[in-house]
Amino acid sequence: MSNFQTVKDVEAHAKGRMEKVLTDMQHDTASLRTGRASVNLLEPVQVEAYGSMMPINHVATLHVPEPAMITVQPFDNSQIGPIEKAIRNAGLGLNPSNDGKLIRIPIPALNEERRKELVKKLHGMAEDHRIALRNIRRDANDTVKKMLKDKLISEDDDRRAHDDVQKMTDGYIAKLDGTMKAKEKEILDVK
Image 1 (tube, one colour):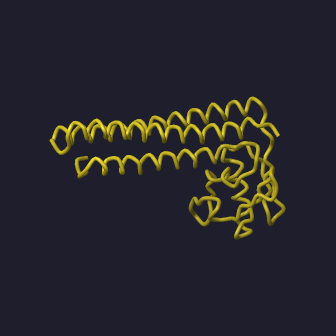
Image 2: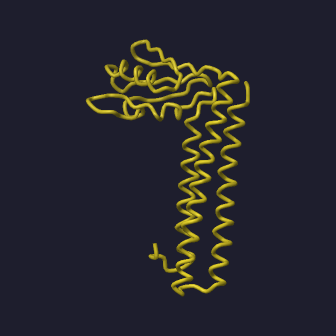
Image 3: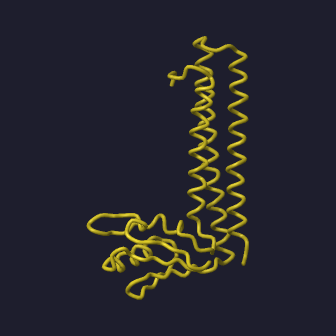
């Protein structure tokens, strides 16, 4: 923990960790179904192929030919059955069909109840990520306090560092909330 030489090192480390939390939030929200087709919906799907579990995009090409349809083109046509089965069993509420060469996945419109469930899940995700940001802030502040205690920095540096870390945390929470609000709007917008 005390391998930091300066307050700037502590802040840079905290910023890098906060960036990862924000990226993770963006990644998580991309996999929430909004009634609009996106290949990100299939990200959690694991296909049993060639004796091991593989992400769907390792065994097939994914396309969105129209707003409410995803197509899956297996690299090897013998994998069409296991891919279709994996999509059905992934708990995404999707109903794929195939013609022997291509799997078509219609994306049904969301009903009001499902939209509310998704928004609730989104808010839970956002809160988990806010907690992660606050934990990073706490770690950074603890490191700065230890540096003060070890007389590596002055009290002014300590105060300034705490203020900077707080401003950085507030900025990342605002970005995270922006991501959440954009996704919430996407979920609630009825087409």
